[in-house]
Length: 324
Image (cartoon, rainbow, N blue to C red; front, side, top):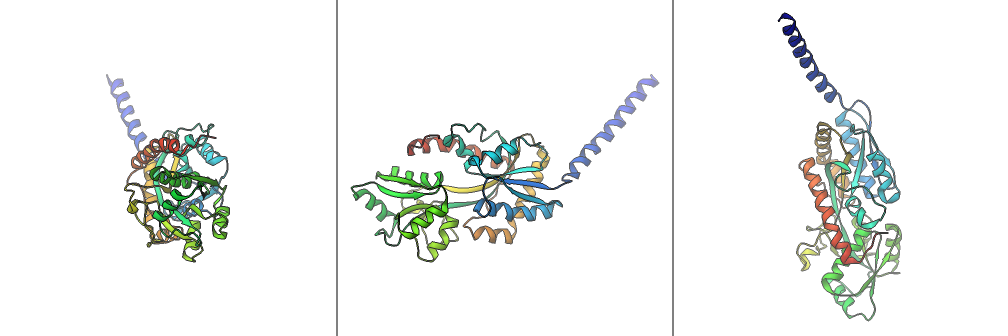
């Protein structure tokens, strides 16, 4: 009997020690620097958002948070690296709208957009903008649509990415006019050809468009968000011009390898929201036409990714875009 009591006492004591030990390990995280892999080259909007958030997050966590550019492979290089990393919270991914779009764009896209990562929070949203060269006779979106309808030839429009193309293809579908896409590999070349008048119509992201619109080198007709952009408050939304619910946005978010412990995801969520609420972060994002939207909880960002994943297939089908 005495031996049984002793064994029970030893077990209770062991369990009593085990709980604080686990708690101690959780509280100790992080004990070394974190890195956020950025699926883009330095200097673009994605890179700017990452660095704007990384520095204050590092200060809050007591460890440096380093932005590491891993461009290439249509975002798969960075995504695959994070997916293969230990789920310990030290390697994160800057997630973009390209993740849920991926299966619709590339035949060799294998990762499941929803299950491939643990999602932490949204890190701001931007929008696209429909622009024309100043020599264009269209002063409004309605006039551009009517011009396209009356033209004997399909209207040519420039886009530097699939998101921008989907904006114009949706306008084309809703208004029954003909237009052909002139696809560019990057925003710089598309902007150069639009500013020079080599092509008269285009859809761009806000960051490369803003300085040219403000300088009068491009005329802005509409933005693709549900609310007007604070960077260009005089430019109407497509939605308010007669197309309720019309919305296409650029966004960034934070993800971690699948299986990362919930307490680490929750901690990262709290610190990311603190960083996004800083006035310096808000001001930095505003310079590139981004807001400081965040997710109320990691589950909310996961639900957002799920909705985005379900949204794209019919839009790609309508646009006639086949996976490459």
